[in-house]
Amino acid sequence: MAEKEFSTYKGKPLVRCGDELYYGSMEERFVIRMQIKTKKEVNGLQVADKVAIQLLCTDPDLSPRKQLVKASEKNGLYLALDIADVWLERALKM
Image 1: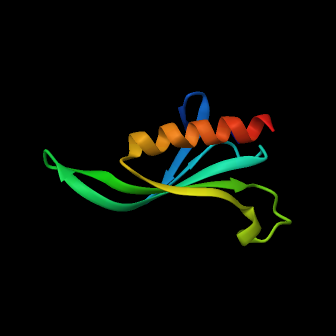
Image 2: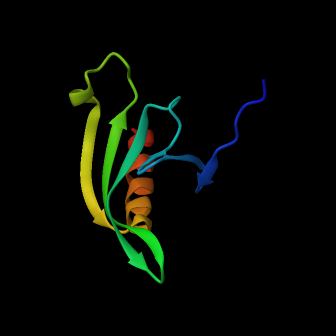
């Protein structure tokens, strides 16, 4: 079976399921989860307004509470992706 190709952002996988986006690879130590909290209409299109960002440790032996490393909320998906990229890069270098 062929491996599924994911969309990427700055060379890392970006997967969307409804109003949740995951940025990074689950094979790495950390991954980012972004949740679209609210949307607004711009020129007839629904766009993300408030986006919650979470840096998560992918260690399955940790409790969900301990997997959460850092969290924030930003206005707009583009700003959220920029912050997510910085957090993930720094976390993967540790």
